[in-house]
Image (cartoon, rainbow, N blue to C red; front, side, top):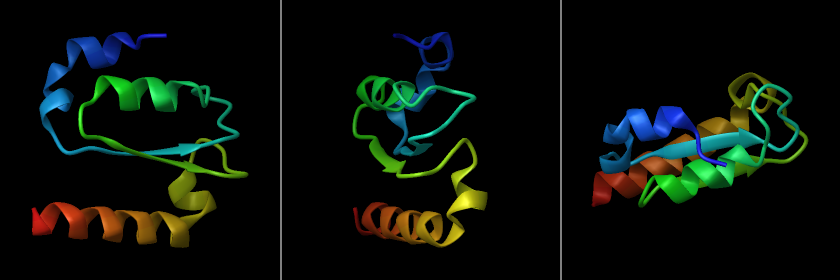
Amino acid sequence: MVCAFLLVRSYLRTRTTLLLWGDDDKVIPPAYGPAFHDLIPGSKLVVFKDCGHVPHREQAGRVLQCVAEFVSTIADA
């Protein structure tokens, strides 16, 4: 399962990337999360349990926590 977007937009492969995914996403199947993660070296994948396509609305507190932790790790690098 390869997403053409990632192949075309290869600059994502050189950027520090945080992937946030809902395990109940009905728009883009959850299996795409690990596929994206595998295609973007050094990326971090966080899968939200009982969450759909919009984690920042459905689980805002947890998203903020994940983003803060992610930013702190790249700021220290």
